[in-house]
Image (cartoon, rainbow, N blue to C red; front, side):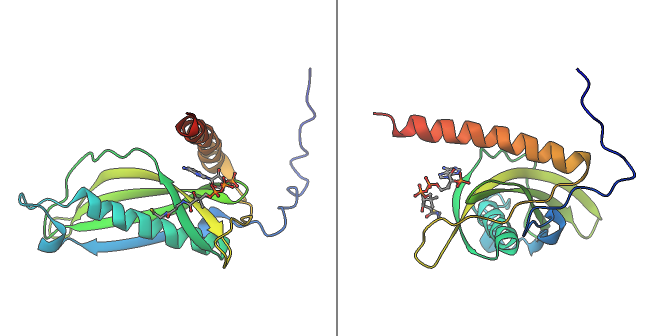
Length: 175
Ligand SMILES: CC(C)(COP(=O)(O)OP(=O)(O)OC[C@H]1O[C@@H](n2cnc3c(N)ncnc32)[C@H](O)[C@@H]1OP(=O)(O)O)[C@@H](O)C(=O)NCCC(=O)NCCS
């Protein structure tokens, strides 16, 4: 069956009310690795990276929602390469998808040796936040206006990850 194709000269359909683009809330952070951030080998603590991921993602989520947000979960993490004392941690967070009261943020973390000009991927994280009101009750989040192939691909993959998370949550509640 043929589906009607959109007239390419026609203006795009209107965005849902209050919708925001991923680019509206992109958040970046740059951190210098001090001895207090490292273990006995001089490489950064995974927990420190996790704290920066959570912070960077939370700022991004607050920019999108205009609300206080609570971390509901962080998906599995694996650290591909270490970052040493004296090197730099670069974080980049953006919204991939919004649901009813929750939204998913993708955080990409890179290591950088500023003296040599090297940059390398270290870890990628998907963080889910829930927007809450003053009484800490979940509240609806503004929709995300996705444009282009890459943003649509990220949003579709986010919806699949959400199904898996909610299934795990449901299983965790079973007796
Ligand atoms: C996250 C939290 C607010 C959810 O509250 P709740 O009363 O269970 O609310 P609901 O079941 O209505 O879920 C609200 C939203 O959270 C989402 N959610 C809940 N648990 C989730 C999880 N583990 N992973 C991903 N999303 C989750 C739900 O899908 C729902 O999103 P939707 O409205 O977009 O569909 C609540 O569990 C909480 O406060 N947890 C502690 C969070 C915290 O303290 N974080 C700081 C670090 S410890």
